[in-house]
Structures are given as structure tokens and as C-alpha cells.
Image 1 (cartoon, helix red, strand yellow):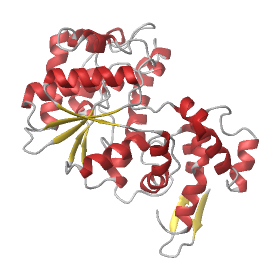
Image 2 (tube, helix red, strand yellow):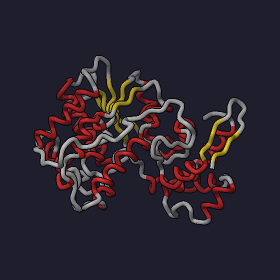
Image 3 (cartoon, helix red, strand yellow):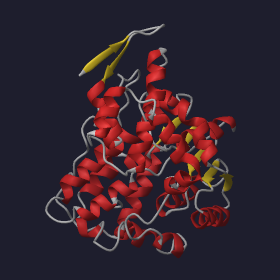
Image 4 (cartoon, one colour):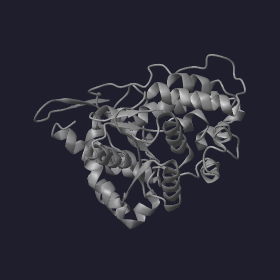
Length: 349
């Protein structure tokens, strides 16, 4: 179903079916969108496929591939670059490789205080490398203050992705134009619970789906919201993806551990507590806000009030069970629909 809404400044086309899928699933496969993109951006038009049969790799060989991916994506920087640094193994690998390649002069690591233990590891490791570290306080109030802008930037309902906008805003204020993210190592090394659930004959198929979800879900800030910033994803570099997809599943994850080859490659290079953190899929938080805690602190009340403003058509679908029940992320996306519709009404999208 396609709907057209007249605005004061221009007419924007809304794909209502895609709106419903975004609320329900949290992402859309590219090139689908709720509102047509003004500047389409793709990490790849076709997912890079393995160039050879699945073969074993040594930790040193994998380390070399990671270094090459960072080197090809981020040439020797002449200006400061910001590293989104959670303190987990993925962003620690990125920070370590950048320091080894280019030294510390132009590196700044940005972290959030969402989880004290992980934040503490980030602070200690950055200090041990001699990298400047900026620790930012992100709260429920920070989230609520940015929802309106995030919905406008993403041109769709959203969940708690305000952390990215929050960090980008601070980085811009510090006059840094290049941001580097470790996004991609979970995808390359079986880091998600959905990887573990797919172990067996369908692993490669599920792995490809996760890569596509990654592209469709995470690049929107780079597209619409912060054009002044250049966001780089060295671990989504094409040759690295080809190499990683050629590795056997057993070198990525089992039912009891994830990122097996990566952890072996980083043993002795990163602190052991970082190497071992999050070995079991789903036990590392990263930059995902504590939604249950926020819910109990007042986010749940905000969501309930917002849902009262939902369009009748979506209220009916919600009552009929079209959207998953008791899923806080879905509930939050529903709550941002009225904000989205207001932007649409006034021609802001």
C-alpha cells in the first residue's frame, strides 16, 4: 500500500507496508525504505561472496587480513579520527590495529558510561595504549531529548539508536570529521545469537542474511543524519568479508562460544578480560542501552502516552497481534510512529 501525504513544502511518498515492517522487524532490506532515500548509500550492491572453498586459517593469517582491511579503509590519517569504543573485543581490536599502524597522535576513543564493567575495561585499555579517551554520560534523558531528531534523520520510526546520534553530535563539536566503527566483526565471526541458532546446514545462508541486515540497519546515520561526518567501517571491507565467509563455521562459533578465531588471534595482544568478554553470544552489551532499566525509570510511561497518539490503522493492527507483544523494542518503535507522522505531515522528511 502506497500513501501520498500533502505537505506545506513538498509531497513525500510513504510506503505503508514498509512502515509496518520497520515497526515489526526493526529494519528493511535495501533498497527498500519507508520514505525514499535522498542520497542512496550502499556498502555493497551485492554481498561479497567467498572466493574459495571453506578452509582453515591461522590466527596470524586472520590478524594480517584484519590489518589489511583497516589499512585499506583508513589511509594514514593526517587529521584526528574518532573511534567508537565500547571496551568489547571488536572495538578493542580496531583501536589496537589503528594504534599499531599509525600511532596515537590522531586517535581519540569515545565511550559511553552505559555499563560500568565494560566502561572500565575501555578506560584501562585506552590508557594502556596511550590513546586519548573521552567518556560520555548517556542517560534516559539523553535518549528522550534526541528521539525527535533521530526520527527525522532516519526518516522512519526507531528504537534506542539515539546513542549513535548522541556520540556523533559530541564528535562534531570536537571538530573531528572522520568516525571509525568496528561494526562487522560480529557478522564476520559468528558473534550473534542468531548465528549460534543457525549452526549446521543453514549457517552460511543465515550468515548472508545477517550481513544484509547489517547493511540495511546501520548505515542510515551515514546517509541522512550526519553528512558532515565520514563514517568508516573497516571490518565491512569487501576482501575481509570474502575471506571471512570462506572460513568454516567451526572457526567462528559453536553452541558455547563466539568469535573463536578472532579471540585466538588477539590472545597476547589484548588484555585477557577483553578477549574473553562476551564469549557466549548475547552476553556483551556494547552500545546497546539498557532498555529494561530505562523502561522502569520512565521510558515505559513515555511509550504508553505516545501509543495513545497512534493512527487508528496501526492501533487496530496492534490489537490484532500484527506486532510482537511484550517486546520492548517493538513497543518503542510503535511509540515513535506519531513523531514520524508529524514530521511527514509538516514536510520535514
